[in-house]
Image (cartoon, rainbow, N blue to C red; front, top):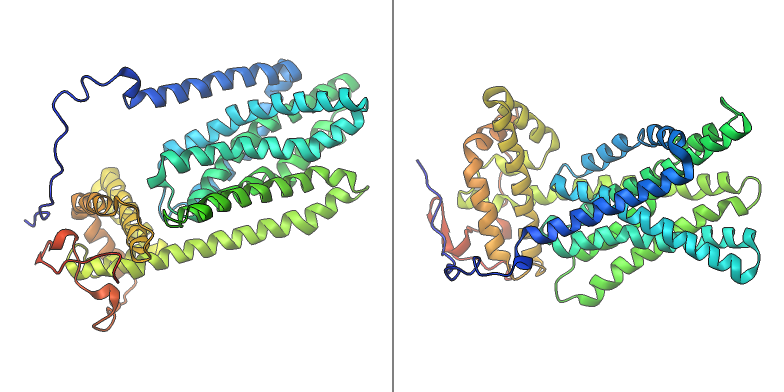
Length: 440
């Protein structure tokens, strides 16, 4: 049985180092603090929304607002299938948007609107200014905070444009969920007071505009911020100005589109529909195209980068090409599930994700954008692949063979990616020439 080649070991930590660490330095403390913050924010926002809508209005708003959530989350998760991030990031993003960001927005927007009304003695002008200027700035900044936190503290899970889009989109979905509860619950209360019901009611009109026509509005705004962070993640560590300006540019674009959307009602009788048709729908279509194109590019990166590891013996010749096809990945998981049950299918899915991360890591290394932990991260990923190869290798080879086509030939001798490579000059097949990711 083949064994994984040895790797240099890191010096062990001093004995008792963790035992004598201060309690606030333990790993669970930040998680506990963040969970507590989100839970308290959720309780406060629940009380505020219920106070404004009443219990019955809150329940109606909750039932209607939850309808688009599964579709939106599933859509963003589908985009992330090439290199799926951990579920904990999505849970955090949704919770931040629904609780912390919504609470910040309600408190800040109310305070700003009241201050403007007091200063100008014109409540109607204050409402318009608050909706078109204050709300976009406050809300997009509050939602962007979740993307920033994951960008800073979950850097390994944030490797490109799609990661920024998914995190930003799920955060905005959570925010829109809470906001829709408020608007729909308030509309229901208005209908109760006026006695209106049915299609002509305020509740029906609000549901049609916010849930049917524009469930993607908030995600579309915040995704622009996510694109900025995703582009920054692709930049080298030395490109500090670029890594700051790109997220800020995305945030400003998100604020601008949000302000245009909120201000559409002031553009005349058909202003809302004009902005919707002329800006929102085309922007949404362009974003969908960009995401599909980015996903295609990611799959092509897998096909181009992983053959180097196949040449060295870490992967079988068929694997890079099977891993570069979403259909082959799905067939491989189905094959593993059929022959080994859910644990085998889960192992193959993890293998696919780790292999994709390895391809992205190698691409960054070739372009001189890898971090100082390049070699350590590469070894970690190769070890994770090695542990799961028993199920993944035959499943992926079966997926490619199911197409009844041969494995594509490697590039001619001399191609950069066809050079033998293994970390620290070792590979499963024996010694291999050392390779420097920064010199190719």
